[in-house]
Image (cartoon, rainbow, N blue to C red; front, side, top):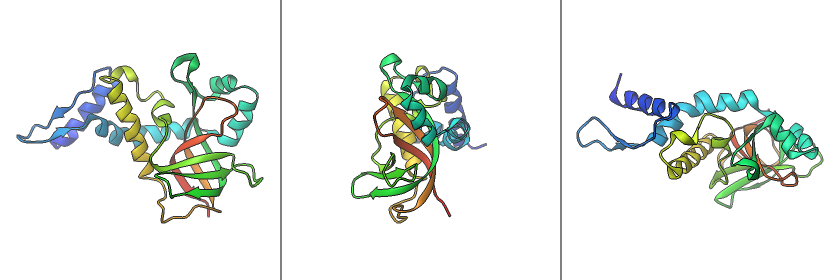
Length: 207
């Protein structure tokens, strides 16, 4: 096995076993420092995070109806709360919707989606490259804060997961407005009245 493969494996094991993450020099003289955050993302995103989201995802239209009867009740059934009673609920979500509007002019590109067919936007999909929030990091128990060196490293993980997700989404050369799409991702909801801002890990244009 190559040294780089051994390094990535050891870094992942450290992150999931309670060890603090630190940058480690490669074994080769003059090598550059390995990035433990990048190693974690590369070894968990497709093999652990996406399957975990897929397994637990609640249909976003169903979640919206559940939230109308109480956000905390919906959160206890379908979500994970980060930050105690004052924190938002993080939900793994999926759905099928029609894109009503697409904003690619901003670096924080988005697509508004209609879930119920009434022609009105019910939620927004983030397209990046600038992303709000850390729902991908916080929605599953895969990434435990206590296993990271400090808050800075944990924040880097959130950004790295978002960047990885963006790399897998349709680019600006694939117009989405007016298209029917299937999506999978995560969202944080802090109040029953807010429009969901979903961070997708996949967006597929329906045939």
